[in-house]
Image (cartoon, rainbow, N blue to C red; front, side):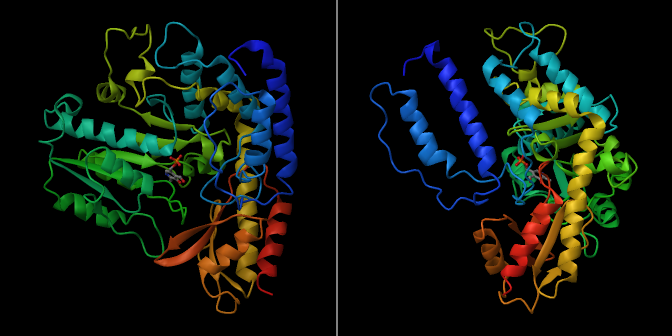
Length: 456
Ligand SMILES: Cc1ncc(COP(=O)(O)O)c(C=O)c1O
């Protein structure tokens, strides 16, 4: 195969073939593939044909991918790629725009509009601005980096230029996501230096009184609070109203990881569990979770645009500066950037507020249905009431498989459903997270059959 256009029709036909095949197999193939290693192959010395490539895709790839894009993959917090976003993503690759700077394409304008629509969707104030990131991890990293810049500005240090050697700062958090801790390491705070704040009893939510004490007792010149909305296992929400008040009193930066928890705002409005999110200095969202757009698509928002720009500014003679708006390459981590905003833009355009809310409500209803069944089963223990989309459970003493890990293996080996492990109040658990738009109640019923069968 040479780099030319002759194959275009064949490529399109191949895409259609694999697309349809994948969607047919989602219902019948194992949710988790048992084959995960590609056999060694020599690098091609010469061009190969499209049919040679398709043979490899057919035999080595399409048969062995996971069903993570389907209805019964309940591991982590995994969204599917909705049909409109899938189509949009194909166009993203077709157009292959580089959203590093403005001035030569309308694409950046779609990104700005998508951010504005997300603010509207989540009832967040227009003072926030932001950008699409590769995921929630990179949004959390931006949160750590901009918070660091803010702390520097309080101490007369431009961290982006001078580094953080002289910075006197303390970071507080109760139950940060692992990616937030990783981000602290990447941002130079260190993964182990944050001060743990106690959680409320039987919850992963921050004890705000403990935070009050910790802030009062801290001698650090600058303070950063990392809050969660929601935590990845317990789906617990920190009390953002009270925390934001404390942050105001102590001139502390408040970053909220609301990767998937923000979607609760579509169900309960801005005065539900996320009340106070609008007061944060920066926020992480994740569209490749509950907005059901393809990887990779997170969002970073901040109400301190100037600090973000100081943090990420890039200057080089060959980089044409944009025009009316700030260049995205000076607002984020990467210079060259995929048009990842487009699948999110199209999703917001096509499904609208009510369409997106309905998908969220269905997932919550499915999670609650599974939780209800587990709670009534003598073989399982529901470890906490299900309040959102994650079900946390373990085998009860009556279960023939005594440990969560054995039970998890049996469930996943069924090929019918896939769940991932978690830790709840120090106890090993299983987590089933509902965030795929294709999941239906019949998938819950199908999985209940598996849960019953492994008890026999
Ligand atoms: C609360 C929270 N924050 C951050 C992340 C990391 O997200 P990503 O995998 O998109 O980087 C996750 C992933 O599950 C999450 O649940």
